[in-house]
Length: 123
Image 1 (cartoon, rainbow, N blue to C red):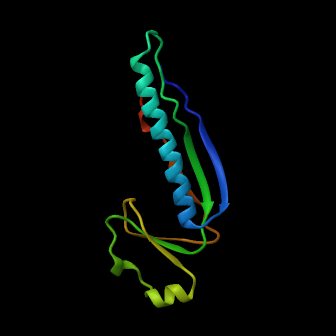
Image 2 (image 1 turned 45 degrees about the vertical axis):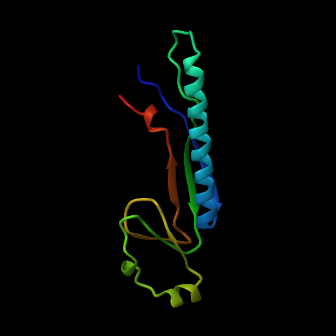
Image 3 (image 1 turned 90 degrees about the horizontal axis):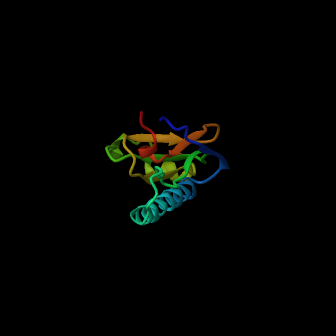
């Protein structure tokens, strides 16, 4: 039986990249803690009903002030603006654990960040 999953949508408005990152990490940590607790409870369950982890799916929308992010496979020489100019223009820079190379986010661009328990999405 295929279950329909609910996804909590959140418009975070305009937010610094680090603040949005920290919020995503908190949501992930909450889901990991819920799955750990669920794993402990399932051992003690005598019910024949299928149990489902109480994780929550999120889709976050946010607009960032000017920021460059460098993914795991990115190279700093791909950043086409020098550090001095970047700082003068008030553009932040972060190395991230996402895949990919260099990405710019800025005003007028809405970024979507999914936080999903992929074990719940299968056919």
